Image (cartoon, rainbow, N blue to C red; front, top):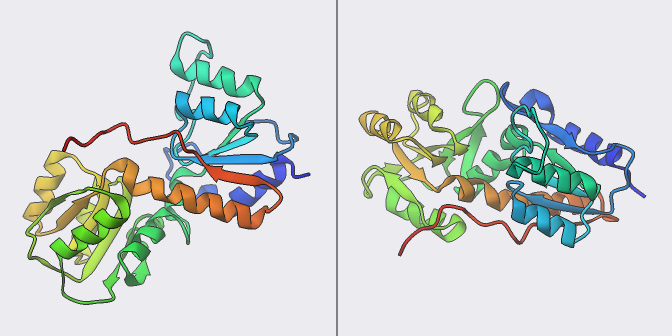
Length: 256
């Protein structure tokens, strides 16, 4: 039997709070450390659909990339969506752990995995606090159009800023909403920054800095890592049944 305390200890070692951003809310957010864990479900975000799925599948622990709860809560009642979800989880003894930005910045975390998708070498953190990644393409002179095809085949349809015939050698990556990486990526001579989403004026700034952008969408830039995380947990705790959620989808739909 594996207790929640043992699982949390493993996560805290792999994704230490020291890697998380100051504003973040990481670690065990719901749960009893002495509870037994037999089933774990990974997901990007705790939603009503994810809660229903966790109950139906007798899950003992949800490992959610995004924190739940994220901000301070003054009331836990059925009158709010957040309160209803918390009551449902607690009543069924379902714990919630979130590594979030610690997972983004970990040595094998989300940004490192994005760097691998882009086949980057000589990869280092983009910022001094360990967030983001920057490296060089193994194959020099790749066109932006070629990279868009690679990303589309792995993560789905994406948007971009820049010229399709732009030659790209040095690439920075930042999953999620990391448009504040634009200045640093330009300072470190990146030709391209791949990120989840960016504000319009940040896109204009990138264009003025001659920095191309690939925007995958927030969901796509992180959701792939949910499956990888489930595989990692299974390898560490083979006696625990662990699987990614099958109910969550990107709330932003693309019209074709």
